[in-house]
Image 1 (cartoon, rainbow, N blue to C red):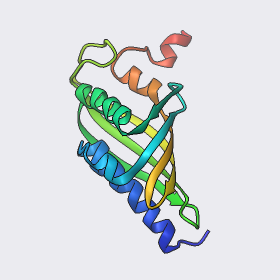
Image 2: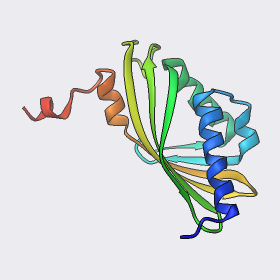
Image 3: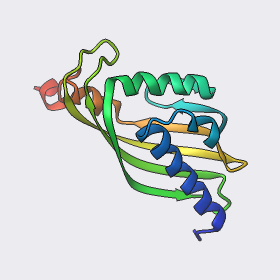
Image 4: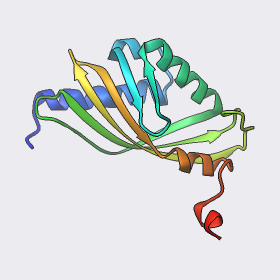
Length: 150
């Protein structure tokens, strides 16, 4: 697959979204970088509709986990730039309540694969597949799998 200016723009858009909104917590950038989009969270089975719901979900997560850092493992886009994919590792500290789980001050890591549909140089739709089991194990809410098998 050849890299085109359009596909490079789509990858840059995805990186700006992740860095500005997820890492830097600049919620005002949500509307700048995206249409009134739809996020499909494939693990939790929850769709997030529009900027307001997405910001609410991000604020809930950000209140529970500080100092988010992101390492991009892989990014690519379709030749026409309509679709882009980002594989990332996110690290943060669990220092706030998360889904009823008291802060543990544990350093956690979550791997995520997110597919984006780009429209008018903005994110229109997202499909997210994150390692929520690993996150819950990291904060002690779920035992490691080897303990469950014993």
